[in-house]
Image 1 (cartoon, one colour):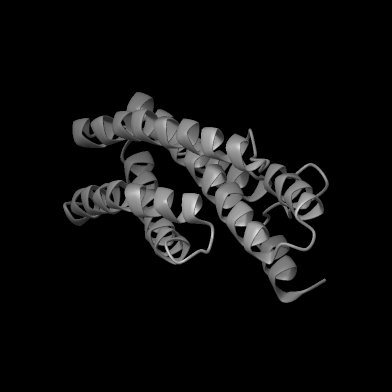
Image 2: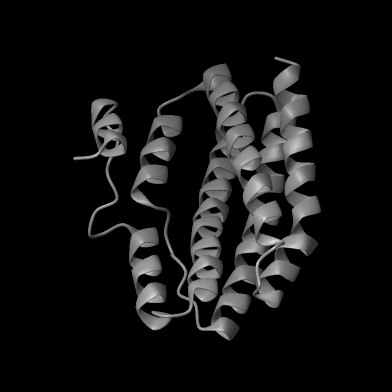
Amino acid sequence: MNKIENALESVGLKQPGADDSVRIAKEANHARFDRDEDAKRSSDFMAEMADARLMDTEEGRLASTRGIDPEVRAYGELMIRDQAELYREMTTLAAAKGYTLPTRISNLKADGLADLEKKTAHDLDEKFLKMICIDHERDVKEFKKAMDFKDVEVSAFAARRLPLIEEHLRKADQLAARR
């Protein structure tokens, strides 16, 4: 067991096993594009960011229905709408490229979502904002990296959609700063 697996196990998180949607998507893509490192890199980005879009949608659903702060609820609704739109756009691009994307969130993200589902009232608002800020910080970095991919369609998608992810991060940071 490696350090990451040990750390995950020590905090009670599932490891990406045989049923992990992102691992399955990546394996399918790697098998299909066995010798094309650029396609593997692009398809990995697409699989990971599709997972993030699914997670952000679910986090938004919880915030919009169970959040206490009206601004957090409104932000949750924004996540539902915008993340679902991004996911649809990603599925269209992936289909054109022959990439497999996850259709449900990964095991690791499912654990995070389960933890969020346990929260109530202000604890849910705070946990949601903390999680969504971390998610969007990661996504901004990943979208910036993807802008340099040799795959022009994936690079163009990342460049076109990065401003939306940055705006989501800015809004989440503002909400979190008020707490």
